[in-house]
Length: 399
Ligand SMILES: *Cc1c(COP(=O)(O)O)cnc(C)c1O
Figure 1 (cartoon, protein in one colour):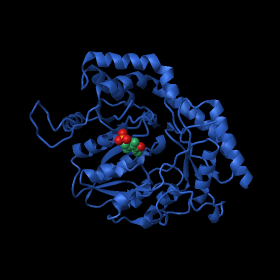
Figure 2 (cartoon, rainbow, N blue to C red; figure 1 turned 90 degrees about the vertical axis):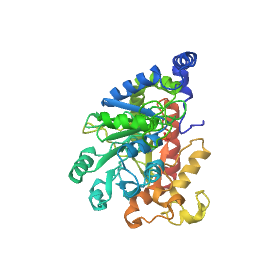
Figure 3 (spheres, helix red, strand yellow; figure 1 turned 90 degrees about the horizontal axis):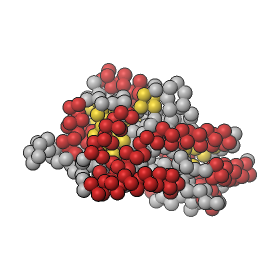
């Protein structure tokens, strides 16, 4: 059996006619940019996040850039965020001319350690940018309290967290702005790139709308240097079909996660993700990420298992056990992914920047231990069992 880490085939065949009809209706309408599909998606998406305004754009990365620009964050400003995330989180901050300031993540939750934020605040700090990584909600009560005390903006990176709840409330509705991605592998995926910004503030929504269309509040009047960043009407029509299914798909993800946890929690060397579906929070499990937390493989057996360049590997803790498990699972047809093998502060793109490396130990350790098991709503019971059985065989034989 082959188990892919992610697949859209089954979802497409379940939805087949609906998507085809919506796409062909949009193609026939001749309205490819803007129009009713885009407007109705923005209304429906805003409603699903419990905010009055959603503005669509070209990607989650652009959503972050547009949000930062709309909040007037640029050269000379600092934004507090995490190094253990997808690269785009920090890249967006740097690309508007501001400086990412990394604080470490909590080793158990993978999320920003809010106890470390205050010491990272300087006179140049303008915003906090927490990431609801893997679909798990950040403690927004703590973040909001710090932001209020220090007069900082909050930009939520919700790229992996469409449908995630904190305190019974959707993420993306706590900060000044929430940034979503509709990249195909996210909880709500389009048939290409797409993104959206959510906000309670009309003027921020308007500013983002202008920036996303060349800083143009009125046709051919350009009041600032903006971008061309829109959600295509065809993508909006795909998303209009998919959005009503999001709660069901998240329930399926949660069921798969519970099954993984029940069947794997006693396995030596393996640490399950923390279940946050308590206290009125809902982890949407965009990824199911385990930690391989003991070195049980002899160094000589695993020298070549990690494909990263040596100069980067030498800065990271030993990953040989995780790499051994990943490779052996792959040989048995179970395909896993490492999110993320290199924390952002160690990426070559940031080699000329200086960070307080000492304080990012959890981010580095996680990069060497994490492994994402196959996770998508349509993952069959047979496939789940095959994943579980192979992990059990491999790890129970070691111990
Ligand atoms: C996917 C992702 C992004 C970027 O979204 P794109 O639509 O791919 O540009 C940003 N942040 C995080 C945490 C992501 O996972």
